[in-house]
Image (cartoon, rainbow, N blue to C red; front, side, top):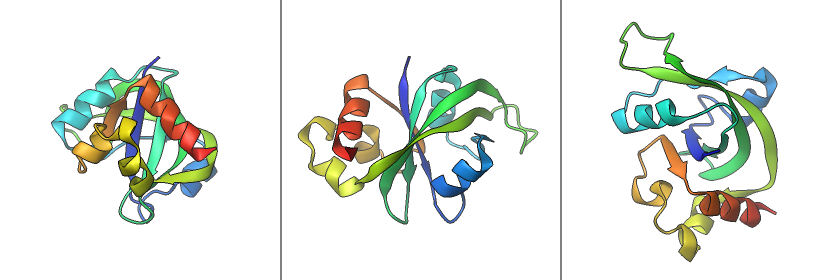
Length: 134
């Protein structure tokens, strides 16, 4: 199993809306590196859900329930989506400031590549963020 982080602007698609929907396809990715990360996702992988712009914090965990397929919002075959379901809401969201202050997380893509919307995490990084949320 691999671990990931996806970013969403809360005014466009919030963790709360995701929980109400119960499942969504992760669309609108138009960056090749992020697209390649979507293609690498496998059913059962765990995904941290990050609110960008407003809040700037990790708020929950999602699970990949369907692997990459053609993005239904475009005819361009270059773009894919995966289906995600909410798995767990974090008791204490973890802020970007907390992540940046944690030495073991200083090299994650969220810190190094701030504009990347879909990124891999090492298991240790994923676990550290969850530890920070407890």
